[in-house]
Length: 541
Figure (cartoon, rainbow, N blue to C red):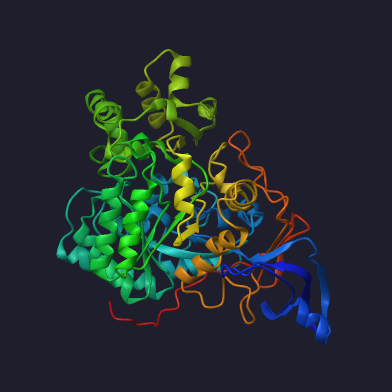
């Protein structure tokens, strides 16, 4: 007998097709039969060792988080309910051009400091890897959910060039090509960039194009956090489209928002740009989170010239009075490239986390509010925080527009990504709520997407981008990565006030046919493993 039959489920299969009632049979980690209601009545119902009554529940493929920052959280926290409870069965890591492989000892120490605000410093982690393959092998020891990995271009540049704002030599560029090729051969699904973060932002388009050529030769995709989401957003999107067309590389636009006051109501311009490129034959997808505010680190707001040289150099500049005044002028008057070319508004910058517990009083308040309480200018407060917490503070940036969020999520190449930073005592609620928020708020309450459309955006479409032939759909032969949820009650529990509350209405989540969530509770199952690029080994770069 088979392992499990899920009885009388309303199947939303991830393709966008209308739902149907069926019994779904699982054995040895895969879907072995999908018996629709009419067929079941005519030929007898399937039996299994275990039966699960799914009356009133929707059965869908597991959700794929196309933009996750769980690079260390998956190793640190076996429970990982932040994602498992949402129905996420696969996360894509290595985002925004900075992560922990490939590295050497020097680069690892630098990266750990640079993205402490995203992932913590990692003092509780045994960094027993250096290459992409070794990191994926570490994941394969057992994690809560599956994970794919993007080669972080900024980390590659730090390893080959350093943290300086200069062009790479030909030898350095060749080393970067080899590092990207090695990472793809070891299982990465593509390459990411953080083009408002150092040192990735120092790469010119010619360098990025060359690296994208390597990615394309292995069937991967390029996932850029591009050079501006503010004053130069449309130009930055055009740059990425042109660059990947030149390289012959697939493009996936990370957290494809149109933020800041200069972009209110301009989502249709972005979508028209993408529609034209798609009509011309470009291979483009994008992801978004279903919220307006963004989330990053406070140090990310600094101008690129102030960030050159790595964390120690940044701290030295902040400590120097004259240089700190130059930084303030660029932030508040000019509009720093770290803040997307828009003068910073301190009343939109909310501190969401700090590394030093002595600074906890700043968390949950905007920089402007804390400055007012201290009787000092906002920049003085921000500078104090950066120095005292050694660049670690994370932030929410309240600069989004709801009409843009809704317009972009309707697009036919849209996928879901949480961009969830799990670090900090008051993180963005998207880390714990993205997927149920799509289903509860934007499907059931607002009707922005139909249930079938939304599930396709969260399952089948991202699986196609990742070129996963046996995931993302409820089909015979596919892996049994499945979610059962109540369409009438599914909702994000997380809020800006209480961001770590788990969702409601998602009782069961399976990975490879094993219950990761059962009756609304996290089991002790660690069914997740690395999901690796399936391109032929030895593809020519």
